[in-house]
Amino acid sequence: MRRILVSAMLFAVVLFVCSTLFASASYADGVSNDVYWINPDGGTYYHKDRNCKSIHPMFLPLTVSITAEDLSTQSYNQLSPCHVCMDEETNFDRKTQMDGETLLDHILTSYAEKGAVLSDQIQIVWHDVNFRKSPGGKVLGRLQGGEILDCIDETQFNGQLWYHARSSEYGEGYVICTFAKPVWNNLHYWPLNDDEDIITDNMVLYEYWMGSYQLDHGLSIVEEVGSDRMLSIAPMSVRGDMSVVPDDAKIQIAVKLFEYGFICKNDAYNELIDDTKSLEARNWIASSVLKNHYGTDDIWEITVRTSIALFIHVNDLHTEGQPSGRDRMIISAVQKRLVDEH
Ligand SMILES: [Zn+2]
Image 1 (cartoon, rainbow, N blue to C red):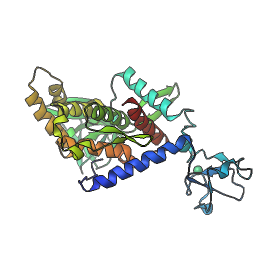
Image 2 (image 1 turned 180 degrees about the vertical axis):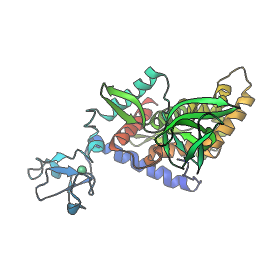
Image 3 (image 1 turned 90 degrees about the vertical axis):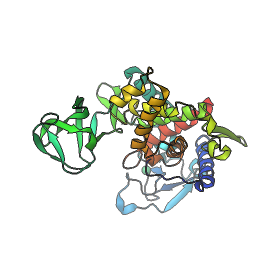
Image 4 (image 1 turned 135 degrees about the vertical axis):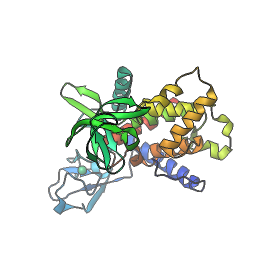
């Protein structure tokens, strides 16, 4: 998300892409103009992805395509949707046997029941970082950038936050928070049944909250375009009206960054939620938290970037790799629910 740079010139493009996305999203329930890919030599599935990973590479890319209408004809009605690449298209996750709406409900319920989402891993963000036996103590070894460790606990020492973590190479030890960050995706917080945890990420929850917050405060709006209702992400830029921004917007957003596990809770969090402190003092802390996390404390830029991540660059919801079909289904459910609720 932080990689995205937004300029005013992009807005026309962004709004256009946004409406295009919503237009194509509405195909899910009706007739689709999309093409599907098939292997005419004995294939029993149709695919969304012509390079689908379920197919032996020697047959890739698939070269024969059919339309949604073709699927109901006698030649093709024996074909089934591919298990690997079609879950998003059919809005049905085979592993959990749920649609996107139900998956979203499970995440929200799980969050409400547990009260908090805590990151259980940290990632090293610098080179040759000391891994110590105790905070400030003997060096056990050096950790490299990108390394991921199980996080056992957090502790304060000499006014600094330290992560108590487990390294496969050095065992248990401590890393100062300056050189590590919580891994905020891939959280195992959603036990589906006794023997399996489904992994999703808390970015979805943050985006859902942020989307609601923006709509509730007029930072974005739902527009009627013909018979469609869609989110417009940039009313402030259109109106040039910053007066709609609540006085405590920075504080609210910074608090959520802690509560959704992007930042391990620390003294700044305690001060942000301490309402005996003045709004001015808390806003000052919130600004530094936002600058640290987003590189800016500009509410307009932060909210627009978040909207773009939610509605266009779904990849930016994730630190690495592609979102899975399941992730996309959940995100579609978030988008739909936000529009329906407003
Ligand atoms: Zn496939």
